Image (cartoon, rainbow, N blue to C red; front, side, top):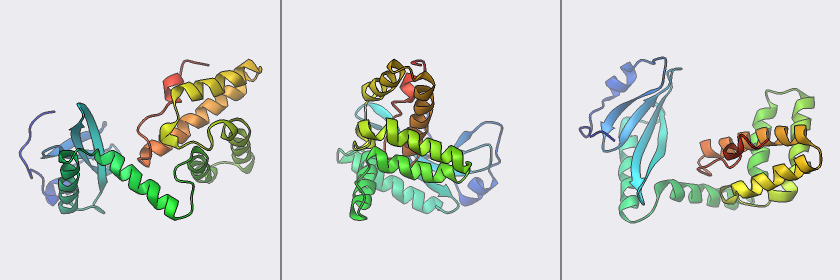
Length: 205
Protein backbone atom coordinates (compact mmCIF):
# COMPACT_ATOMS: atom_id res chain seq x y z
CA UNK A 1 0.00 0.00 0.00
CA UNK A 2 1.50 3.39 -0.94
CA UNK A 3 2.50 5.82 1.79
CA UNK A 4 0.47 8.98 2.14
CA UNK A 5 0.70 12.07 4.34
CA UNK A 6 -1.50 11.92 7.43
CA UNK A 7 -4.64 14.12 7.41
CA UNK A 8 -4.24 14.89 3.71
CA UNK A 9 -7.99 15.25 3.13
CA UNK A 10 -10.34 18.12 3.89
CA UNK A 11 -14.12 18.28 3.72
CA UNK A 12 -13.81 20.43 0.61
CA UNK A 13 -11.57 17.87 -1.12
CA UNK A 14 -14.04 15.08 -0.38
CA UNK A 15 -17.02 17.19 -1.40
CA UNK A 16 -15.38 18.22 -4.67
CA UNK A 17 -14.17 14.73 -5.60
CA UNK A 18 -16.04 13.79 -8.77
CA UNK A 19 -17.22 10.32 -9.73
CA UNK A 20 -15.48 8.47 -12.57
CA UNK A 21 -16.30 5.49 -14.77
CA UNK A 22 -14.64 3.22 -12.21
CA UNK A 23 -14.45 3.49 -8.43
CA UNK A 24 -11.29 5.06 -7.05
CA UNK A 25 -9.73 6.13 -3.75
CA UNK A 26 -8.55 9.42 -2.28
CA UNK A 27 -6.23 8.99 0.68
CA UNK A 28 -6.13 10.74 4.03
CA UNK A 29 -3.12 8.80 5.35
CA UNK A 30 -2.29 5.88 7.66
CA UNK A 31 -4.63 3.60 5.73
CA UNK A 32 -7.68 5.89 5.87
CA UNK A 33 -9.25 6.68 2.50
CA UNK A 34 -12.51 7.57 0.80
CA UNK A 35 -13.79 5.12 -1.79
CA UNK A 36 -15.72 6.95 -4.51
CA UNK A 37 -18.17 4.93 -6.58
CA UNK A 38 -19.27 5.71 -10.15
CA UNK A 39 -22.71 6.75 -8.81
CA UNK A 40 -21.05 9.44 -6.66
CA UNK A 41 -21.40 7.68 -3.30
CA UNK A 42 -18.43 8.17 -0.98
CA UNK A 43 -17.39 5.66 1.68
CA UNK A 44 -14.80 5.98 4.42
CA UNK A 45 -12.59 2.90 4.65
CA UNK A 46 -9.52 1.95 6.66
CA UNK A 47 -7.03 -0.55 5.28
CA UNK A 48 -4.87 -2.32 7.83
CA UNK A 49 -2.83 -5.45 8.42
CA UNK A 50 -3.79 -8.10 10.95
CA UNK A 51 -1.87 -11.33 11.40
CA UNK A 52 -0.13 -10.73 8.09
CA UNK A 53 -3.33 -10.22 6.09
CA UNK A 54 -4.61 -6.99 4.58
CA UNK A 55 -8.12 -6.10 5.70
CA UNK A 56 -10.55 -3.25 5.19
CA UNK A 57 -12.86 -1.75 7.81
CA UNK A 58 -15.94 0.25 6.80
CA UNK A 59 -16.14 3.53 8.73
CA UNK A 60 -19.28 5.09 7.32
CA UNK A 61 -20.76 6.99 4.40
CA UNK A 62 -19.89 10.62 3.63
CA UNK A 63 -21.36 13.14 4.47
CA UNK A 64 -23.44 11.36 7.15
CA UNK A 65 -20.10 10.31 8.63
CA UNK A 66 -17.80 13.30 8.98
CA UNK A 67 -14.09 13.30 8.24
CA UNK A 68 -13.35 13.93 11.93
CA UNK A 69 -15.53 11.01 12.99
CA UNK A 70 -13.86 8.71 10.46
CA UNK A 71 -10.44 9.72 11.78
CA UNK A 72 -11.56 9.07 15.36
CA UNK A 73 -12.90 5.67 14.33
CA UNK A 74 -9.63 4.84 12.60
CA UNK A 75 -7.72 5.75 15.75
CA UNK A 76 -9.92 3.49 17.90
CA UNK A 77 -9.59 0.65 15.40
CA UNK A 78 -5.81 1.09 15.34
CA UNK A 79 -5.78 0.72 19.13
CA UNK A 80 -7.62 -2.60 18.80
CA UNK A 81 -5.03 -3.87 16.32
CA UNK A 82 -2.24 -2.75 18.65
CA UNK A 83 -3.92 -4.71 21.47
CA UNK A 84 -4.12 -7.83 19.31
CA UNK A 85 -7.78 -7.66 18.26
CA UNK A 86 -9.17 -7.56 14.73
CA UNK A 87 -11.53 -4.53 14.42
CA UNK A 88 -13.73 -6.28 11.85
CA UNK A 89 -14.29 -9.26 14.16
CA UNK A 90 -14.82 -7.02 17.19
CA UNK A 91 -17.51 -5.08 15.33
CA UNK A 92 -19.15 -8.28 14.09
CA UNK A 93 -19.24 -9.64 17.64
CA UNK A 94 -20.85 -6.45 18.92
CA UNK A 95 -23.50 -6.61 16.20
CA UNK A 96 -24.15 -10.24 17.03
CA UNK A 97 -24.53 -9.45 20.74
CA UNK A 98 -26.89 -6.61 19.94
CA UNK A 99 -29.12 -8.91 17.90
CA UNK A 100 -29.00 -11.48 20.69
CA UNK A 101 -30.13 -8.82 23.19
CA UNK A 102 -33.02 -8.03 20.87
CA UNK A 103 -34.19 -11.63 21.19
CA UNK A 104 -32.76 -12.95 17.94
CA UNK A 105 -30.79 -16.17 17.64
CA UNK A 106 -27.56 -14.24 17.11
CA UNK A 107 -26.51 -14.56 13.47
CA UNK A 108 -28.02 -17.85 12.44
CA UNK A 109 -28.21 -18.41 8.70
CA UNK A 110 -32.00 -18.62 8.91
CA UNK A 111 -32.35 -15.20 10.53
CA UNK A 112 -29.94 -13.57 8.10
CA UNK A 113 -31.61 -15.26 5.13
CA UNK A 114 -35.06 -14.10 6.24
CA UNK A 115 -33.83 -10.55 6.65
CA UNK A 116 -32.37 -10.76 3.13
CA UNK A 117 -35.63 -12.26 1.83
CA UNK A 118 -37.75 -9.45 3.32
CA UNK A 119 -35.63 -6.87 1.53
CA UNK A 120 -35.63 -8.80 -1.75
CA UNK A 121 -39.37 -9.43 -1.69
CA UNK A 122 -40.02 -5.68 -1.89
CA UNK A 123 -38.79 -5.77 -5.49
CA UNK A 124 -40.28 -9.12 -6.51
CA UNK A 125 -43.69 -10.41 -7.46
CA UNK A 126 -45.58 -12.18 -4.69
CA UNK A 127 -45.19 -15.50 -6.53
CA UNK A 128 -41.42 -15.12 -6.96
CA UNK A 129 -40.95 -14.09 -3.33
CA UNK A 130 -43.03 -17.05 -2.14
CA UNK A 131 -40.99 -19.47 -4.25
CA UNK A 132 -37.72 -18.06 -2.92
CA UNK A 133 -38.84 -18.44 0.68
CA UNK A 134 -40.16 -21.97 0.13
CA UNK A 135 -36.87 -22.92 -1.52
CA UNK A 136 -34.89 -21.80 1.53
CA UNK A 137 -37.30 -23.40 3.99
CA UNK A 138 -37.36 -26.75 2.18
CA UNK A 139 -33.79 -27.14 0.98
CA UNK A 140 -31.52 -24.96 3.12
CA UNK A 141 -32.80 -24.24 6.63
CA UNK A 142 -33.05 -27.94 7.64
CA UNK A 143 -29.33 -28.31 6.91
CA UNK A 144 -27.63 -25.05 7.90
CA UNK A 145 -30.39 -22.73 9.13
CA UNK A 146 -29.38 -23.13 12.77
CA UNK A 147 -25.68 -22.38 12.18
CA UNK A 148 -24.06 -18.98 12.56
CA UNK A 149 -23.57 -17.55 9.10
CA UNK A 150 -19.88 -16.85 9.71
CA UNK A 151 -19.28 -20.51 10.65
CA UNK A 152 -20.77 -22.15 7.55
CA UNK A 153 -18.14 -23.83 5.39
CA UNK A 154 -17.79 -24.34 1.67
CA UNK A 155 -17.92 -28.08 2.33
CA UNK A 156 -21.36 -27.78 3.95
CA UNK A 157 -22.75 -25.71 1.09
CA UNK A 158 -21.26 -28.10 -1.47
CA UNK A 159 -22.82 -31.11 0.29
CA UNK A 160 -26.23 -29.44 0.34
CA UNK A 161 -26.12 -28.62 -3.37
CA UNK A 162 -24.77 -31.99 -4.49
CA UNK A 163 -27.46 -33.72 -2.46
CA UNK A 164 -30.12 -31.82 -4.41
CA UNK A 165 -28.42 -32.59 -7.71
CA UNK A 166 -28.19 -36.26 -6.73
CA UNK A 167 -31.97 -36.29 -6.31
CA UNK A 168 -32.33 -35.21 -9.93
CA UNK A 169 -33.10 -31.62 -8.92
CA UNK A 170 -30.35 -29.91 -10.87
CA UNK A 171 -32.36 -26.80 -11.69
CA UNK A 172 -33.47 -26.47 -8.07
CA UNK A 173 -29.86 -26.82 -6.94
CA UNK A 174 -28.83 -24.04 -9.32
CA UNK A 175 -31.52 -21.67 -8.01
CA UNK A 176 -30.66 -22.52 -4.40
CA UNK A 177 -27.00 -21.78 -5.08
CA UNK A 178 -27.90 -18.37 -6.52
CA UNK A 179 -29.95 -17.53 -3.42
CA UNK A 180 -27.23 -18.76 -1.09
CA UNK A 181 -24.72 -16.59 -2.90
CA UNK A 182 -26.98 -13.55 -2.49
CA UNK A 183 -27.63 -14.22 1.21
CA UNK A 184 -23.92 -14.53 1.98
CA UNK A 185 -23.18 -11.40 -0.05
CA UNK A 186 -25.79 -9.54 1.99
CA UNK A 187 -24.13 -10.80 5.19
CA UNK A 188 -20.75 -9.58 3.94
CA UNK A 189 -22.20 -6.11 3.30
CA UNK A 190 -23.55 -6.10 6.86
CA UNK A 191 -20.11 -7.21 8.11
CA UNK A 192 -21.51 -10.38 9.69
CA UNK A 193 -19.10 -12.57 7.75
CA UNK A 194 -16.10 -11.97 5.52
CA UNK A 195 -16.48 -14.70 2.93
CA UNK A 196 -19.05 -16.22 0.60
CA UNK A 197 -18.81 -20.04 0.58
CA UNK A 198 -21.45 -20.23 -2.15
CA UNK A 199 -19.34 -18.12 -4.52
CA UNK A 200 -16.44 -20.51 -4.06
CA UNK A 201 -18.57 -23.11 -5.86
CA UNK A 202 -19.53 -21.12 -8.97
CA UNK A 203 -18.35 -23.95 -11.26
CA UNK A 204 -19.91 -26.77 -9.26
CA UNK A 205 -23.28 -27.03 -11.03
